Figure 1: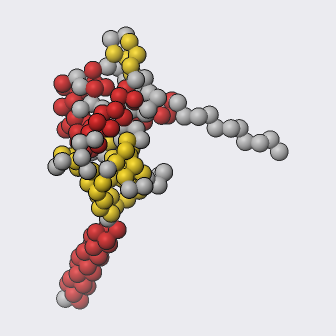
Figure 2: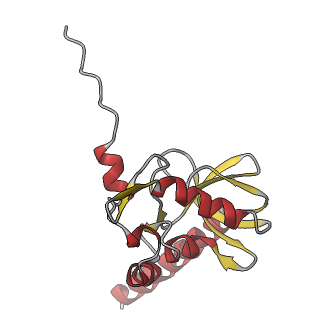
Figure 3: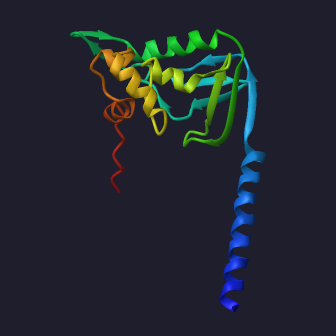
Length: 170
């Protein structure tokens, strides 16, 4: 019987902690609306703060892709696609966490459309922890980067990372 009471108390404490964690996330979640400006294909500035579209990874601004043997600026194109969508009206974003660069990771909508999903579905970005179905749709339809040969943005960044300086010799 003592074990049953202890188990019940543990379950109640766990439920209370889970509810508290959910409530704290609600309190720390930021919701913002306004006119945004694209930084690149998956980052934007809104209300003076930088945001990264959560679950999305777009080619880097300087990234080049190969379409039928011809180079094209897929990173620049991704920024143009995002800029075009941002011009459609006010953006609404919600964010509860930050990336390693301090940017808010956000889920955004514009005119009721899920902007993060759109960027992947259009082929201007790839899935990065979410939006796998949208990526498959873009890949099957050969939209955007999927119409060409390209390095996934995270692989391109790794290959083009600036060389780290050697440690000073004592």
